Length: 543
Image (cartoon, rainbow, N blue to C red; front, top):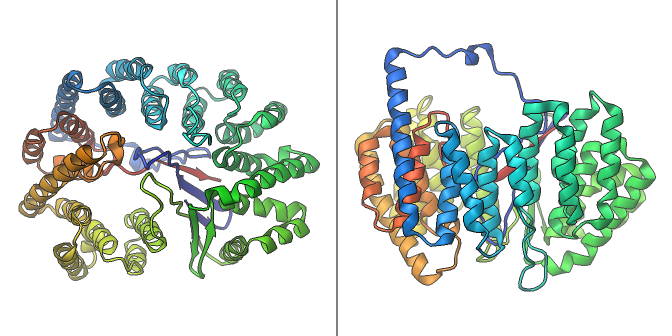
């Protein structure tokens, strides 16, 4: 999780993790979408560009159709995953087919275990549909089921809530206040199962309040009425905390304090049960670590508690050294001039939490990726603070092309250091991570020869890792398998530089599911406005 503060602007970004980290891209703007600049609205296309665009669209359609044809060779779980990716990749150029693939996901997944992977597939399909038909997306949301409890009895993450967050914004953008009744009905349905979509309705209510304060107040009252029915989990508590932050002006102080008291009580009761998860807060003035995901909830609620009852806030801080240190860092960052980053990275994947040092390094690496386009010099500065040799090498390689525009010598040194780090890396997964960074830099710098060599290495290493993972852990979700994410990134990068060479590598992949998914990645890469890489699933809230 990361928070950027500066003036009245707050950006909260976090990764939702189920049993494992499952990459999927999504960003939510919790404010009116910014107006595009006039020069961005009108793009003049030459006849050659139009011809190239049409050819790429046709090739993308052919690749998606070919991938779809391979689905009959797969198990139902693999097929559902592939169909969800197909629906996601075809929203622009094959709208009706995208909808058909999304509906098929729900048909196939109905016979699969009600676990996190099924929820992820259904959410991907539902969001694909919502790109063109948000109302049908609401219908699919209604078909998603609450996940079965974990084997130890704890509630499993309910993906319907983040799915609703994205979907409700789509409906609001399309229909505005006219869509409120549909959204209210969908929220009620989820609330009846104990999972009212507070994170989804929060921004809707806030935006509606600008136009219809009475209706916004009514929706707030209804949302709070579901609080007593909530499924008690860290995820639901975090969402409720966001809701309170967004719409606290609509909630009487006594009621607000009562809700906060219950959330704090729940967090304290469960704090020791999830102590294997660490939350790291980092700013320019230092860092602090809190144990247990519930500590994040306390950290999130603390500013509101300070406002309504300072003595209560002091008592909470006194009971938790990590919380007190994190709160002090947050306060100093907020009071400093200029934007300051407070980053939180929560461990707890299927293979256990990352070492603390790696959590911090990965957090900085993600920050570099966000900075490099708009502020290359600051990106280089943050990258220089990364000490893990693999993460540093991969990060430097990824941003070398952008640095090359203003400082070719520095970029050349960054690439040289990345190659040296790769040659000394002992783990194949580490080598592959650096290779992907090098490939992205080589493609951006139009180094076709160097890219081809890197592509050869990346594909050989990635497929080997993927195959060994299948043999060792056959039940591991596809997105969590070593090699898959890296091969997807390098395929998206490669198809834009040299489609023939990249597709030849895809054709050489021997496992049907991996080949089909890379065909989808290649199709996505042919979209000039599509993602440059398949990043982790994140929700961003700006206010």
